[in-house]
Image (cartoon, rainbow, N blue to C red):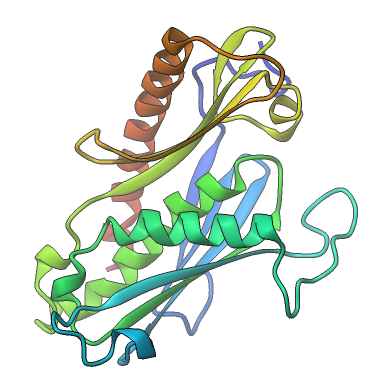
Length: 240
């Protein structure tokens, strides 16, 4: 049994509260246990300067990640001008992952900005941001698809992510903070709904690990992601 009473292959209690904020085109509060991440999507009918007048026009998706000052045990200073390296790295991970969900060539001259703000952190903030971010993107594009401004094929993949790791030699799914800081091996896995990998971030924290252990962790992540994708789909009809 783990610190919160779960079995090794059990996800935390997970919910997606849609329509959490009023003004965003897509808004979801993703709660993975005590990790709460607010994902808001903004759609603008314009492109970044470097994409304008492109030979092959297509839309774009970008992401920004931030942690509120008291999302952790002690206060973290706001990153008002120059984001830290970790913040930039996670923002890019979220953007890369969610661009895989879209056929950008069908998006038209539109930019989606996905803002992921950590309200409360207890491990797995980046994977919660990716998973909740996909729901927010789907909700944001739904009205455009329904009125025929975009084809349904613009949403070409379902994307979700989860953390896994080896803690005291045991493979665990969806690490809480107390497990994450003790992990000998720590992975973040992003997958599509056809079981193809989008991104794998893995680190040996204490000693090198075996290829067989890598396979075990990725397979465990895949099983968790399959459950997450069912949960993602379940909240979409309720938001229509």
